[in-house]
Image (cartoon, rainbow, N blue to C red; front, side, top):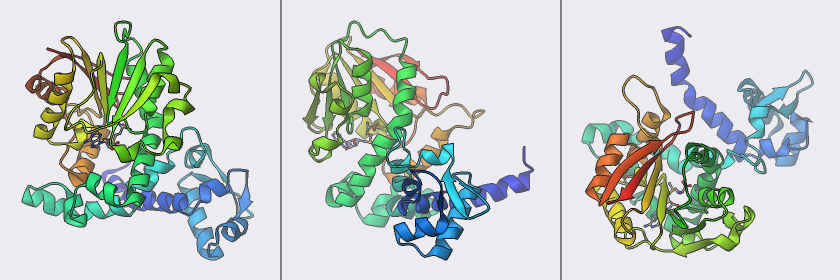
Length: 339
Ligand SMILES: C[S@@+](CC[C@H](N)C(=O)[O-])C[C@H]1O[C@@H](n2cnc3c(N)ncnc32)[C@H](O)[C@@H]1O
């Protein structure tokens, strides 16, 4: 365990690491090393970078153990750095471009003022509109946002499938993923359970580009429908519903409206899985407690405890059943049943 002073210094300089990583991704350095080791000069020439400054950036990426540097200024990807290649099956490139990119970076400077004023949502302070409205007006942000959601899914889908591996889906025929993005989670669940069919409910602009949708790519296109709609208006009937990283986008009143709309479409006994980073008790440090601050910056939402989700479910016509976790506890699936 480092001494307290070293720990504080490490926290202070944390952002340098993520910005160095972001610059490497943004400039295409990890993709340029896909075929194997190359010199700094060759990489700079291919990417149109200043050779001297590019070498210093590559050296810093080496210090973060994302690259390996040899004595001749030649660089190669480490196992960790491989995850930042565009074409890696578990790529985290999209997460990097969103979370350290210009829009999200700009939000953090408002944090002290928000906490002082008791008014969250730095998107309004910085851009004058909510994040999803910004995405609807700025295709560049929308593209980076939805690409990041698919990129997050490379880890999150595995946690959810692990959490639900003991779940008996035999009484469910049709499952709807509300705000399901490009459908990575739902398509992966359909691939695992061949008797299931599914519907992804999403905003129309998110699902119009067929190339980005996962159902065909994961071989379940014949059992998966993409439905354009608005979860604040209505959702389709189904035997079960899931929502991953949806309720954390919204405040309690907004959540109750979404949950109430699902309850109206669901028959008694229908199931709902609220999949989120769940906040544990004070004795446990957890990523959810940090993601909660990001949500404070990003919009009206928050991360919640299981008890807080239980209370929301009960306000909207659901009864709490239980919570399913993967071994890592990184996310949990709070199960409700239509009361
Ligand atoms: C944080 S993302 C999560 C996406 C996906 N569930 C995942 O975990 O990758 C929130 C999603 O909610 C969708 N969304 C926002 N407002 C919506 C609405 N009114 N109706 C349906 N979907 C909506 C967004 O387009 C976005 O894909």
